[in-house]
Image: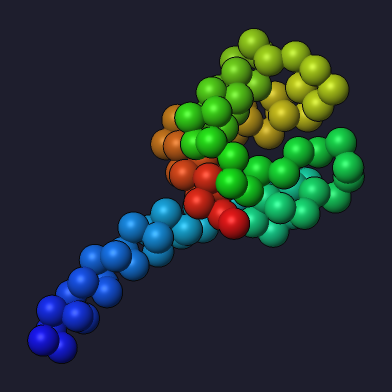
Length: 99
């Protein structure tokens, strides 16, 4: 019984611990969007925590490719050019999992 309970606990907890793992490029985002993406340093910077993963992927790729325009597009273009597709996917997964 104890083994089943332990196994079930580990299986249920595993997706959350994997999803919340901090990507190596997270420091780039943290500088403006704050820890966990939830405390931007300026009110005009959006919160990233809890955002839709697919939306974050598309937004970062659009910034990187120069397809996204707007208030912070120049800053985001510079930052996102350093990100690979794998980096973008890891960041999106991380921020989507943040409370």
